[in-house]
Length: 245
Image 1: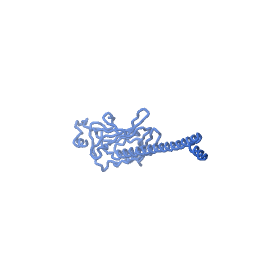
Image 2: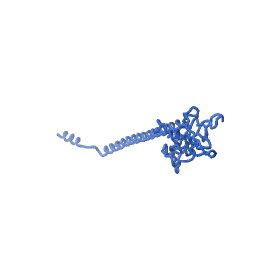
Image 3: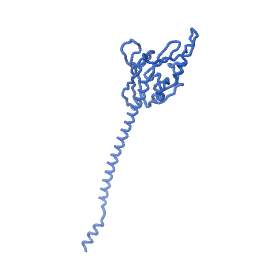
Image 4: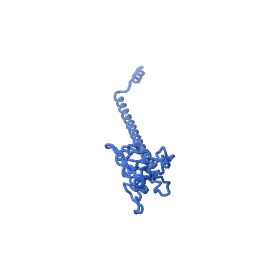
């Protein structure tokens, strides 16, 4: 009987304070390891997501620029002083004739411009587009008549370069930060972009599918002004011009 009471009393005893403290310490250590693992996994996921978003942004911008530059149309604008190809390129802008993304399947042509806009410390690349006006020179600034849409922001530096012969018979083609030829388009356009976080994108090269005006269906925009010498109007292709719009 004495032995049974001793065993029963031993069974009623719980954990000691030391055992509880050891268990709590182990639990804290396990929770810390799990939290660190979850934090590391979450951080890795965020970094991977940011990398994927940056890669996707590069791809979208590159495809957009490729689509715009590849379909540049060699269109002449003519006035009493002569004819010139509607294409001007600088280190931070390209003005050309092309089609809007929504009008790729149509024959509607627009005056377009890829231009770097500077706003305090931030810069952004925008696409400007507007109606071709036979009575307004496409080489003069008419930004008030052009609509703009954002292509890429958070830009630190952007530069366009042009490869080709600006003058026929001028030797081998070469790279230049400005393109002012009145007769032909460049063969290649290079774009370099650096973002505000100092992430430099790889150089992008875009060929122009119509490198010269030879063998390409030509359009002529003629200003509807009167010739100073003869007094006759030179806008004798009105129906053809209107068909472009």
